[in-house]
Length: 347
Image (cartoon, rainbow, N blue to C red):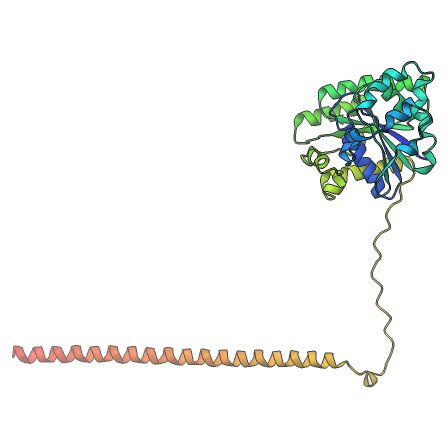
């Protein structure tokens, strides 16, 4: 039976839709059949994965307002191991229609019950408010993941969210768990980000997950290409972060399996005792040995030529020195002869 996870935070712009898309993509990439549910009337989850939800006649709005429509009837297969329940602006009026219905908080839970055996994980993207749609998601969910932008107002908003979670546990869903808080749009070089993370750790001990999502323009670029960050740039830091988040979710439910280590190279076969005389070396060995010997001969010839060259240089230097000595002797004799001539002239 599927584990239902709600991605929720009543503050907008903290990365809920981005987290839902990429967590679902990471789970699917790991081979887990996943259903994404878009509970935001803006339809960002649907549009971000390439589904033109504004043109659809049947969306998640219809299963909330008309119990005769099955979930399977509005499900779209968008990637390997990944399906989607789309949403559009029609969902904005669903809350007003649900108010008068009996058991309105359980409608989504009952609708998803028919498909929980078909998936391993169901990820719900909640709207940026604590309205009846969010309460339906919390009632249907087994656990929540809270994206948190590292800023003061987002941190203060956690208090209201935790209060709602407490009330939902008490009245509607006593088994609701909190998997953890995921810091988003983080730049660890900023002093503010470091301080906010420290305050969250102190205020909610044990809830801050061992993963954070760095701030990057790639997250703004991915929806334009209608892809997850894992598809747009598989080696990006953001892709690694959401894979790590997926691993933490799997570990939370005991579904994570450590990848098998790479096999070691085969050990060298044992050497058998053989008669050396009976061993016949391959012809390529002889050719290699011949080439090696020929190379050594060429090196020896080169060394000999270098020695000859050095001898010729030494001989030439000796000749130059002799010529210089003869020239000096000649100059001295000329000087003596000139002095003798001068002496005779003086007489």
